[in-house]
Amino acid sequence: MKRIPHPNRFHYKSTVKTLALLLAAFVMGNAFGYFTAPSEHAVTASADGNWGLSFQQEGKPPVANATADYLKQFNAHYAADTQEKILYLTFDAGYENGNTPAILDALKKHNAPAAFFLVGNYLETSPDLVKRMVAEGHTVGNHTYHHPDMSKISTAESFSQELQSLEALYEQVTGQPMKKYYRPPQGKYSESNLQMAKDLGYHTFFWSLAYVDWYENKQPTHEEAFQKLIGRIHPGAVVLLHSTSKTNGEILDELLTKWEEMGYTFGSLDELAK
Image (cartoon, rainbow, N blue to C red):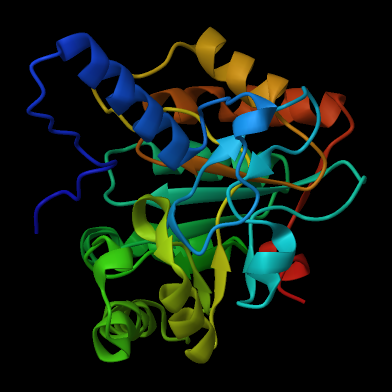
């Protein structure tokens, strides 16, 4: 199976190259929660679209493009409503390229639980690492089997097939049922998708902190990573990192130490799903 591309690719036919690049940067940044919009442009509720965040103040939760109250009706979450310095570590994994062992080592050293949202390719090619995740107390969540744009899937049958196919493979690999935690590929969702996931017994998890870490051949420097991940951490944060990131594998031990020095502890997504 081919490696699953992440994130979207943007293709524009406009002859005004500068405008096209600016538009692409905005869309990509908004989709993955990196664009900081002026507060008057922040959208606070959305029935569908790309998950996006607007960081208004350092150390405070961002404004998301769907409110917590709106998401609650679908058993969906993006951060904990708390003033307590607790954060929730999550990793999206479309394929394995050698960085996950270092990530798991760092998590074990800090006794930090994490959730790994996996696709079919990962379970097929890296079953031993999946078994290690489970053995070391981490949650394995559903990132769909094929990593499609789920917002374009309109039937409950097709939607459930993407999730249930992965469930079956996970149970085959680990011998146990998969926890019903779902993350939409690329943060693309629709209200009907959220309802479909709920109908299947799933909790949907977005995020409140992430950074551009997925380009395998254009990795951020350690300094760039720390600037984003330290500066934007906040109480109740659901942190999204990619396990394919060499930078993440190299800095995670130090990053967790820095967060601990700031007074943060690490929680399980089970606390949000109660």
